[in-house]
Length: 321
Image (cartoon, rainbow, N blue to C red; front, top):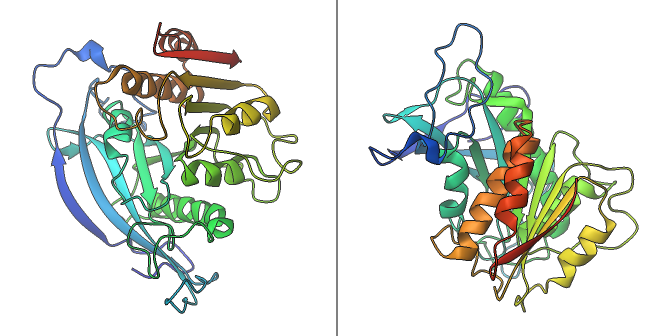
């Protein structure tokens, strides 16, 4: 779909929705039910199922540079996977908090779906754009050289999602709460969200909470100055791809509220697969605690974050609320 000025008629490719297993105790994830419009039927408590659709946005105002054998393009095309909570196979009613997720270099679009599906089952909408040149099927091969353009990609995707949310003809109409928008990223995606969330030159204030997993901040001096967007860092202390010092430095520079989960003996990807290993459960729980506190303004989320981030032999939490 070509996404140009004005609210576009969003075209989507539906993907079969999954359901939460029947009989699971409601208390497991009865955490996140966002604002419900007046007159709407209140949403039942989670855990919810997961539905997906794909929206393709095209930014005609910015080019995609040449990359190896690829000559480049005058526009930037951003297929975006949108995952949303469902009840009995139907979208959960009412606007939901939105999280935009930036993936790493060479990753397919669904690389971290097992992780962020935990957020979807708790009532969040997650949108994951595929960057033009850092994805696994990038023309000319995946490259990090296009990083400078990716912060604007995230802002553009958010703009188009919010426009679709307002459009009565869009499948996304009424799905998103524009006042509850988070930003998360892994690896190169984490570097991208540092630029979008905390670099004064590319800062987008519409993102009101940020999670950066295994990232590093760019050039010192231009980040965090006067910006107090809540930040959660997650990093393994055995990461040799992007060493944990990157998150240590970011935590030192960031303004409160800020939180840093150190994952003991974990490498660059070992704790972020959304599985049942102890470190993966820490990432799942602490990220959800953070969203609940800073997107849904639930004070109990902070108490839960302190508890879930400190697990003997698995993880520790530094916190400056």
